[in-house]
Structures are given as structure tokens and as C-alpha cells.
Image 1 (cartoon, rainbow, N blue to C red):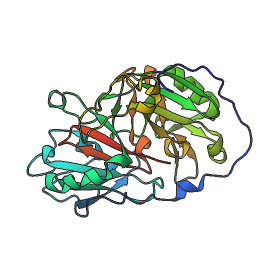
Image 2: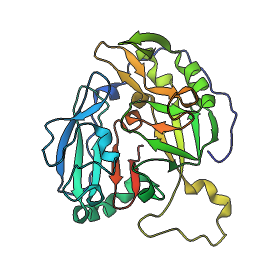
Image 3: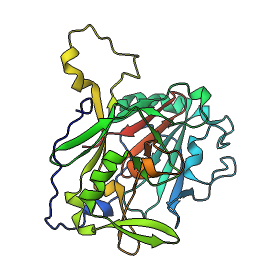
Amino acid sequence: MLRNILFTTLPLLVEAAYLDPSLQQQKPLLDPKPASGRVIPITLDHDLHYTFINSPPVFDLKSLEHLQNSMASYSAGGPIQETILVNIPLNSSQSGTATFYTISESDSWSQAADRFIWMQQERLHLQPILGARLPLLGIGIRKSGMISMPAESATLDLSTPYIHVPKGIWDVLLLATSTEQQARDGNEMLYVDCGALNIFPDLVFGVERGDFEGGAEENDGENEEDDDDDVDELVVKPEQYILQTAEGRCMLLARNADSCHDDRGIIKLGWAAVRGRDVVLDWHGSRVGFEKQA
């Protein structure tokens, strides 16, 4: 698991494959979930930013990342009043949604809590951004084998599509995906073979499992050998970190965290990490929930 550094060899497969059909599908929202909530659609613009469509004046929303900002005036009572469910489809031509729930409506989330991987944010009152420095145990890249390394935290950043990973993981990802670098609107973009998605590896983020509904789990010392059972895996699949453009090309939505000019070395989960899954921004509980995937 991700507590140990495994240096198994990641095989490089060369068989051809057809474009993953899941790229053309939009995953439905979770069920069960609270029955009520105010839904506002979001759409992807040319600059790869998700923006709100016809946001009501009381919400005053422009871009998706405003949902993470404690200073955003998107409700009369402030963000602490809200739990927000964000759904970004795998098919980028389709609109996503942001669904807003009040605290009373959020109470019914408890029946769906086990469908999410929860990351608790410490000292949210000292940070303006929900999703900053969420705790991790490690990060890995996996196909037949796994290469992994320790990691302390990751930041959810819905202002960018890109997943920022450490150089050790980045080097393996580049080798496995055989990227081609080209300019697009003045920016350097990385493209991959659309027909090879099913031979690309998964990105794996290790998260300590916690009981956020009932408090910390008791540990009597009898299960110390079962540490692996206390770890959840947030898995980002190729169909999530590869974006098919309108021109029919496939873009790699990952970057080397160690070469970024801003926030150098910080592991980031851009919106690519939550494509095709629900993500919950729970302001009341100071936590972020990522829907588990099979």
C-alpha cells in the first residue's frame, strides 16, 4: 500500500486500443442524496475554466473555484451555511452542475456518507480556501505494478484542470503516456494517443480512513497489523486525466509539481481529478468528499 515505497517496475504496454467509451458518457449524480437543493449549471470555456451559466444575482458566481473561497458571496448567509455537490462530466461538451444545500438539507447526507472518501481540513478558520492541504498518506502510479512515494497533503484546486504530481511520479507518467508537446494559444500543451487510454496507468492518492460521522475510531491495539484496512484510495483513471478536445485530440491534464512557478512542489487536484465523480464541499463539516468509484 501507499505507506511503503514500492519500486516495482511499471510495464510499458504497446498494444493498440480504441478510445475509452466512458469519455462519451456522463455519470449520473449519486443516489441516494438529499432530495432538495438549488442546482446551477456549469460549462467549460475555451481556457479550460468551468464557469456558471445564468447564475442568480444572489449567488454572484462567476467561476467554479469561487465555491472554495470563504469570502465568496454566493449565499445570503455565507458559505458556512452550505454543503455543495459538484458534478463535472467526463464528456466535456456536456454541462456540469453545482447543487447547493442548506445545513438542514445537508443532514440527510449521512445516509450517503459511506459512498465518499472524506478528507478533513484542519484549521479551516485560518485558511480562506476549503480544500487546501488536505491530508494524504502517499501518492502512487499503478498499472500492473505500483510505484509510490510518501506525501503529506494535496490541495483541491477547481481553478485549474491540472493534477500536479511530484517529479518521481511525473517522470513515470510521461514515460507511460508517450506525450507530444505542442503550442496551443501561446501555451505548451501535452497530447497523447487517443487510442491508447486503456494501457495508461492510474494515479493513486492514499487517504487515511476516518469515521467523520461518529468521531475518531477506537484503536485497542489488536488490529495494528491491519493498517492497510485504514487506508482509502482516491484513484484517478486515464479517462479522467486525459481530456478529448473538440478537435478530436487527447490532452494530458497533469503537470510536474516541482516545475511549477507558483506553488512549487505542492500536490494539486485540479478538476480533472473529479471528472465523472461527485465531490462534496462541506463547509459546515470542514471537509471535502470524493465519490468512491468501482
